[in-house]
Amino acid sequence: MRNENKNLIVAIVLSMAVLIGWQYFFAAPEAERQRQAAQHAQQTAQQANPATPTPTPSQAGGPSAPVPGTVPATPAAPTVETREAALARSPRLPVETPAILGSINLRGGRLDDVALRHYHETVDPKSPNIVLLSPSGSQNPYYADFGWVGPQADSVPGPNTVWTADKDRLTPASPVTLTWDNGKGQVFHRTISVDDKFMFTVKDSVENRGTEPVTLHPYGLVSRHGKPTTLGYYVLHEGLIGVLGDQGLQEFTYAKLDKENPVPGQGLVGKTWDNVTGGFLGITDKYWAAAVIPDQAQGYQGSFTVRQNPTGPTYQANVLGAPQTVQPGATVETTQRVFAGAKEVATVDQYASNLNIKNFDLLIDWGWFYFITKPLFKVLDFFYKLFGNFGIAILLVTVVLKALFFPLASKSYASMAKMKAVQPEMAAIRERYADDKMKQQQALMELYRKEKINPVAGCWPVLIQIPVFFALYKVLFVTIEMRHAPFFGWIRDLAAPDPTSVFNLFGLLPYDPGAVPVIGHFLMLGAWPLIMGVTMWLQMKMNPEPPDPVQKQVFAWMPVIFTFMLGSFPAGLVIYWAWNNLLSVTQQAFIMKRNGVRIELWHNLRGTFGRKTPAKG
Image (cartoon, rainbow, N blue to C red; front, side, top):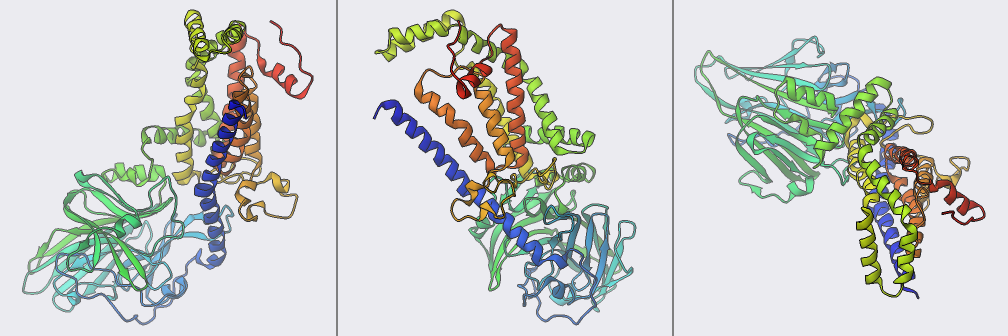
């Protein structure tokens, strides 16, 4: 076997290995998550509009008395029932805002029922709303709690405390005050307000009507029982997150927290930070988050903990404030905030700025190259606000990037034009030193130096695309604004792969290629990946065919390989790549014509589809 054939086989094998690896580690898990989401949407169709249930007697079982100076541990739910049944087990106060529908649990005074009005589980607007928070006793409890820690559990409000409310519902225009008297001289008040988005403000106060001073610690927490079913993305953080003052961003995946050291005397493991001022702690998913935000001017202790229960692990992000001593006849008040909603970029940035929450914008995982990723999103969002379509925004951003990099591309293509002009000399050198590759290379380099040619200049138009490509991939993957954002025609979600497939004639044949065992992910080859492959092939035809047969074969296979690889990428990214290829062809043709160089596209196309004609000097 000739050496170039060996190299060709190695190149093809490596390319296929990359393709298979991508499909196995990224495309297959993503497709499985989408199928699970669709099944979950069908199973939870009745959860989209949670009703206000009739109060029922309290469920038994509560937490043991907490150790003074520690956040109370959340007990494992005693039963697993439907979300509706769990909601019906306690008296509730409806929450109605333009962005949220849900309720506050008057038993415990906690926020454990939040669904998002404008976000649905699938692209179908009739599919169930996204349910973020759920009560204890349901299948996946997830809630925010707040209050006071004291030396005696029955002296402070707990999970079974039934509060009385001064209003029948919570709205942005109408805050609610909850009240509970412990019968020992202390009266607790909790005033909850909410804005028109996803931020709750909780003011807890203690009025001491007794004859002795009382010392209490304020606390806030976000608790999640079990792990989310959508867990498993490789390019963003999911799990516990916080910015803890000067100690900065702290991110713990569920698996990482499981391996932390035990917390002495509490039967759990975790990580604790003392003497913190500013920031937030919470739990984040790909698009959603719940976070407790302490008073930014007051010191606190922050912690991430996990407790292993018979029903599964319970993960918590905790804030424990400094002790507050309430003298007889005095009142002490503390304020916290709770974010529970979608990680909308503008909303998160507005909270960070207006509420002065330290680095709250880090709730969105922009990645290591955030200095490229976030500005790219801002430009996309600017065009979206002008034209109302993120697909059009992607096309316009591509044009802007092409214009910005035009001087570099012009130099690169001009160098390539010079390279084409000396093709006869290069051919003569290769023929003269056919048996001596070293002398051949030396002679070629001398020719490049003499003619002032950069042999790698042609790589620059491709290389400058790479950071933009990955930044756009990150934007499509992590920003809620791109979720379910349509383009035109069959593309209803730019953040998801093209849903069509050439292997069922784009829906004309009544079967799902993706359901085929083992190779199903390869068969989901949509229209836009095919368009991208054609544009990439046209772009490569703009240049003379390489004289080396191995390079020629590799270049011939590259559009095919990239077509299959990008079949599992977000449609928005594939549209960008296809449009960028078309602009590159146009740009290269313009520059080559300006430099008096023949455009090879038509000649190469005739050579591919018709009778080959000898090139004219």
